[in-house]
Image (cartoon, rainbow over all chains, first blue to last red):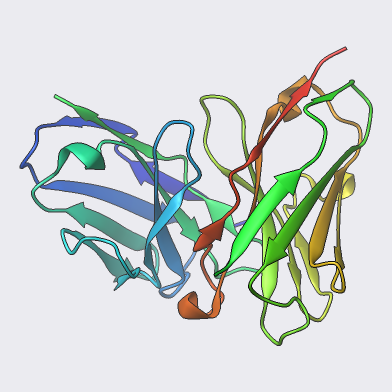
Length: 107
Length: 122
């Protein structure tokens, strides 16, 4: 299995802050890394695929980077609607896996 | 427009087999490269990838649950069925089906169903 970790597991931030979430994998997955946002009671929403490709309709304040085993999701100028849980997910292996999630809370 | 909808029982008893159906529209599971997957989320916990079925009937399962899962497709009915045997309380979760569309090179779940809650209790 490809193991995935995210850090931090949670963070508190204010509107307007820049937030960075890290995802690490136990083996190289090239750029087969996706980021999702999930709000309570809702299905996840794809933000970024292939490590850095912004999904249609997603605000440009979201960006992704990385390759191999280390990836980051950055949110510039955090907005009220960005408070949610964020998951990374790899699609390199035949069986995909999600990271444990990072909860972004209001400070 | 692509849509997916999960259906199945809300309550199952321990040791029973859960059968969930994902009914979709807007794409065909007979088209090259197309797939549909299942993901679950226990209350307050993280997403867990379960299984994926491809247009050519290739199937992939979570290694930790592989012995309990069966995924099948009915192309003519536009449905994907997930069966999970020997259900226990730890399987209480919201179950989602999702589709990685061509816009993500079929490598990310960009279309999701609304999810269906399943409770395991006697």
